[in-house]
Amino acid sequence: MAPPSSTSAAARATARPAPKRAAPAPRPRLRLFEPPARPRVRGHRRRIPAAGLAVALVVASVLAVVVADDILAQGQIQLSANQQAIAAATTVHHQLQLQAAQLAAPPVIVTQAEGTFGMVSPGEVIDLPAVPLDVPLPVPVTTPTGPTGATPAPPTPSSPAAAT
Image 1: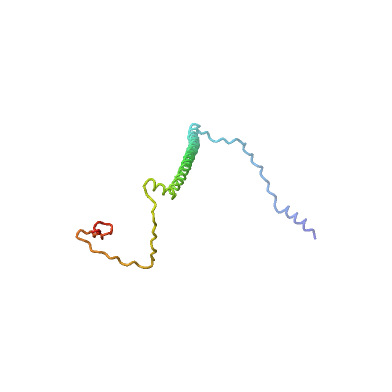
Image 2: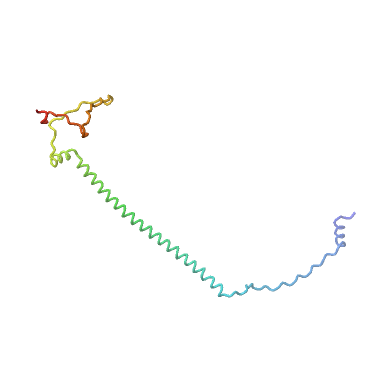
């Protein structure tokens, strides 16, 4: 028997002829792509407002930052002035408190009462008896009022009516 490789090669050669390849078609020449010409006047006019709008927005934003910075600086100046006013008012307040404390001292009050108003110290001091607070007081005796609505005053030993 013949080797299998030789028979298969012979069978392939006789079975079908190989198709011939066609020669490639010549390629067209390469050229640069150029878009169709547009009127420059129209496109140029469209760019100017866009650029102007961009410049206007930049200028407006810079102006807004400057105005905000100015407002902030004015607020800082006002804050500083208010802090100085508060410090001055606090100093005056402390001085007035000290003056009020000095004028309210007991020796100053006694001196002023005796000198200005003519008051004198009492000769004798009588202590009142202690009254218990848990015991109710007796009901006071009242006299009926007269026709004018005023109660007559009881006679006192120093009054002239009691002397007679």
